[in-house]
Image 1 (spheres, helix red, strand yellow):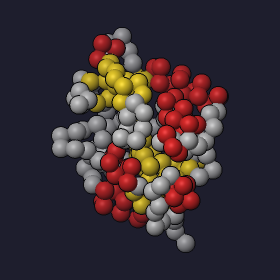
Image 2 (cartoon, one colour; image 1 turned 180 degrees about the vertical axis):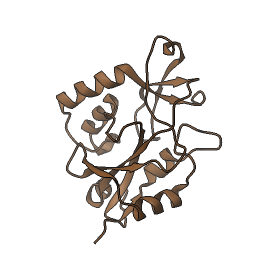
Image 3 (cartoon, helix red, strand yellow; image 1 turned 135 degrees about the vertical axis):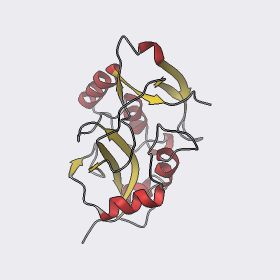
Length: 191
């Protein structure tokens, strides 16, 4: 039997662009994305940060660009920051991103999945084996470390928009090392 996958409400809002946004998934829509990941086997499956999480690696079939750009002396002046919340229920946290960079097309889409039990625990029950909670457009078929603030939010619990998984200090240190040298990018200023 094949695992079934559906998009979570959270992923539908976060992964698909408003008109003109090129810093999200491109060349697909929620229905086409869901159909593709259900009808194509991933090239590999990676263990997630908790037993309820897996990452499925697909060759990028879209024009979507990589999400993380290395910080260099030539682009450091393009970094921006603000306090933001991903949803109305979450507390705003300090966020950093580039504006005015032109990242390359991603070679891979790493789909982040939570099992049905965890999706129900987080208040987003699904009628599938797995729910998509995110997607990492990458150059390599390997996971980009979860952002340090996401790890902290997860440790705070479901009430604060996390998953309830305790902080792993070693994984946190690896995340800090990566995100100290990289940043996400946006096409335009946050509103």
